[in-house]
Structures are given as structure tokens and as C-alpha cells.
Length: 298
Image (cartoon, rainbow, N blue to C red):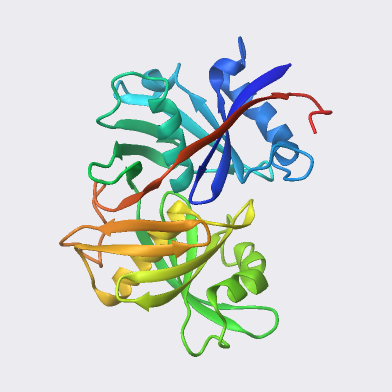
């Protein structure tokens, strides 16, 4: 069985986009199960297509299961075959893909994810950029994390529909840069016993006011060029620590620059409203292809 796919990228996060219609006659859960089985082969950059993950887009049943305003359901399969609740860069790729096939969504659309329904708008005044209204963005707790070598990191656990641990590096963190910290400790922290379901790990450094450098280790993927929800978690932790609201935070990743808009009047002791925090960045189509869905696919 051959499956058509589209390759998309957003800030260097690259995805294999597969439409449910490619699995003729197969239920969505079964189709996702097949993608879970082939994810590690398809995402292999030497013997497969190469990607950080697979986005399964179901436009047929989304409105029935999630409400009439929902255009599609996006299921995220990480490169190791695990499932992710939400992906900020992935949802922009999904929105770009859907907009190329569905008429009348230029003003925006709603995409269902396992982390909640997300409203996506094609941002006016920003050439080619897409704004995602983040539905969930909550502070969980401060964590003082001790590693096996005796080094400790203080950070914030943030829920953005998926779990994040954000460490803002300063002078007492062994003089590490975000990249050095990520490469040396990202994997260990991601699967640390403190995080029951694992965590996406972000190391940040303030370049200037409201301007951060960020490096990320994604749960189920590894080190990636960018992470949209990681940018949101990083900006959220940064602004919470300083009591900031009504600002736009620029996040420099290895894959490019993303912006996180923090609304006015946030009660940092409470929760952000559903329509509050926005992630803004681009997404583009790279190429189309066909892949065999069998054990010899790669």
C-alpha cells in the first residue's frame, strides 16, 4: 500500500503530513496505528523521508467529534512512534496544508488536537506568518532538579497542552550556553523521574529585554531546531518571573525567529484566558511524495 504525503517545515521543525483520505476505507485510529508503526523508519534522515514527526490530518470526522467550527483533527506522531498532545510548529504546518485544500478558511480555522482545540489565524500584516491562539498555558510548579553528576537546575514546569521544563540560564549554571546545556543534559532531564510523563526541555538565555535565545530537547524526538510550544512555555516563564504582560517576546531558535504575544492584564497567580497567548511564525510546503506502508518502507 502506497501513501501520499506532503513535507512541511516551520522554523526548521519538519513534518510528514498525511491526510486521512490516503487511507481509503481505514478508520482513523487504525491509520494512526499504522503511522506509529512506521514513524521511526519514515522519520529516519538517512534511510527514510526524514522528519521530526508525522502529522495525521483528519478532515472527515473532525466536525462531528469536535464541533461544527472545527475544520480538522491533527494527530501528532513523534519520530520515535510516541504520540504528542500538541505541537506549535506542527499546527502551523497543518493550517498551511488545510488552507491549500479547503476554501473559505482565509480568515482562520480551528484544528482539534489531543491538547485541545486551537484557533489558527493567517496574521494580517505579517507576510506568510500564522498566529496560533494557545488554548492552554499554565504554570505548574518551580522545580529544583538534581542530576546524576550533582549538577542542579532550577526551572519552571509549564503546561502548554503538553509538558515543558524551562530553565533560564544565568551565571550560576556552570557557565553553559543554551546549546551546551541542551546537548549535555536535555535527554537526562526529559526522562527524569520528576516528570511522570516525560517533559520537553528548554534552555533559555536573555539576549535583551523581551528577546530570548532558546535551545530545545523534545520528548519523543530529541534535539530539534525549534519547538513552537517550547517557545510559548519559555516566553510564559520569562514573563511570569518578571511580572510582564502586554508584550511580544522574540525567541531565537536554531531554525529561525518566532514571536510569542503575551496579552495585557494577566494574573500571574491564576490562569491565562483561552484566547490569551499567541504563537506567531511561518510555515511552508517543501515537497510532495509517496511512501510504501510496509515493513520494507525504508
